[in-house]
Image (tube, rainbow, N blue to C red; front, side, top):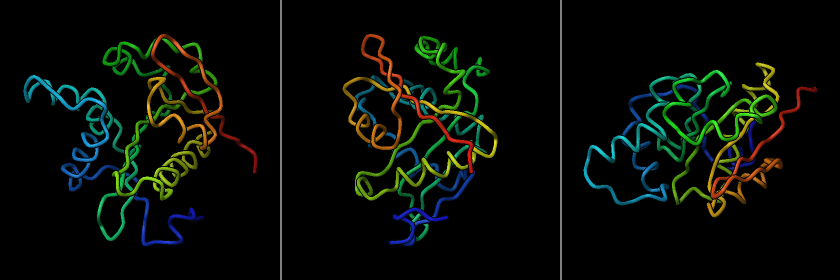
Length: 181
């Protein structure tokens, strides 16, 4: 099954991390980040590892790349069951704040798309590819944690992340995955 974006272009979703795309992934990550200033290169690397590198290293099988003519348009990386992720809980201090919602929304994702590909269903295609895999594994929901002012909030709402809980400046958004059909 192809998304509308895949039917209208040469875009393909590739499952699995490939180091061949690491520089492009980094570029998209920092282009999309709300943080742009770092004290030094070590601080920048630590930030990258905390919010993306950790996933690439530990969960390469849950990385999805949106490619058009071998050019990277965006990526999604995820974790299937957040409640079992001790390393991630340690790395992201805010991760435990919403742990009581993990039974209903166990999977977690991190996604970014190049600025030029935004609004062209690339993110929705990546998201659907991950949801298909989660459905096969009988995972009943997934979530993101973002800030309440983040520009991605509308995207996730539009893509069925209908459950919301706020804690200070953080927003937990959950999406139920139907296991019917």
